[in-house]
Length: 216
Image (cartoon, rainbow, N blue to C red; front, side, top):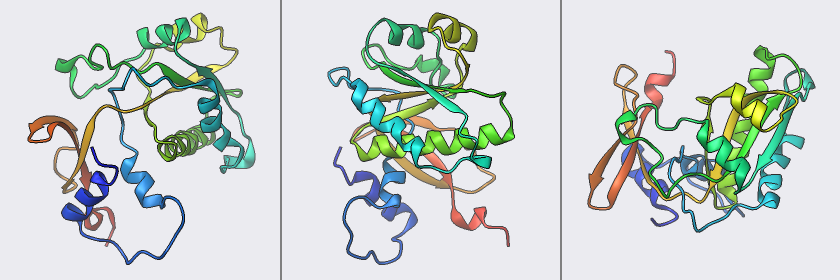
């Protein structure tokens, strides 16, 4: 899939945005478009510890509610610990008939996000900021990821000997899937789906249009 495929499809479906000024690097819009929840990965590409460290490093620069900075991170790369994580997570809840991920496309690198304090509204605000920021960094690095909240907290905490309560799992890897955004109204189904096209299997992601998001 071409690097600018999602951008072109976005413009075809949603229309072009404001005229772009000359810039260096990625725009936020480009990173957001490429940041799709990926459930299938290229197993030939191995994510290193240093790559995960670069991704987690964004947490030294992002906002934190009350500046409490309570989140802590366990890095897991390919090996026995990754096998533990994989055995205790669930992917593709809206497509249970597919039993995702497909064999041979499983993620093998993870960031386990924990909290050093009791979970609260403020911790959850930090969690959302952190996960999104780490995913955008991963995309900037040419990687993809997936936020996983359907996982066995007890088993992951015990088997990885975590000192804190895990709140979410972030899978990281080189994506092996195609995506397409499709506009919907607020009353339409928000469920993602997959369909065979001339480009192969495409994962369609419904997105509510701007006019339905803004309260008049």
